[in-house]
Image 1 (tube, helix red, strand yellow):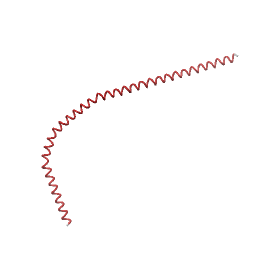
Image 2 (spheres, rainbow, N blue to C red):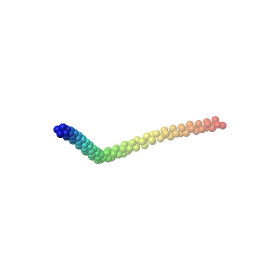
Image 3 (cartoon, rainbow, N blue to C red):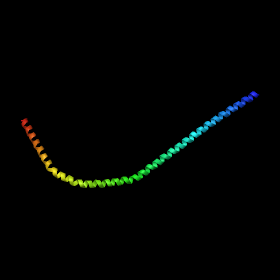
Image 4 (spheres, rainbow, N blue to C red):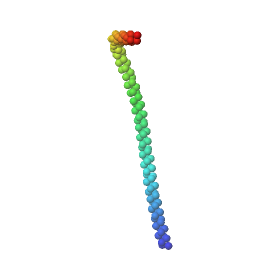
Length: 121
């Protein structure tokens, strides 16, 4: 009887220790899940905050981009206005030279044609 009582007490002690270990493991597991939840919440919050920041930056940059584009159009118009007379002047100066070159090339081509015809006869 004493032996069975001692065996029962030892068995209960082992069971209690096993339950205590299981409770400790469950507590660790719960803490792990809690940490994961906290990390996930922080990451999602940061992601949303970064997305909001990107949207705000885009909203603030768009008017600046439009302003720069307008300034570039204005500059391009001014440059074109200044270059147009220069190109017209260059065309006037180069036209006689181009016409002369074209006449010389036609004369050379005419001579080659005549020589080719003479060789063919």
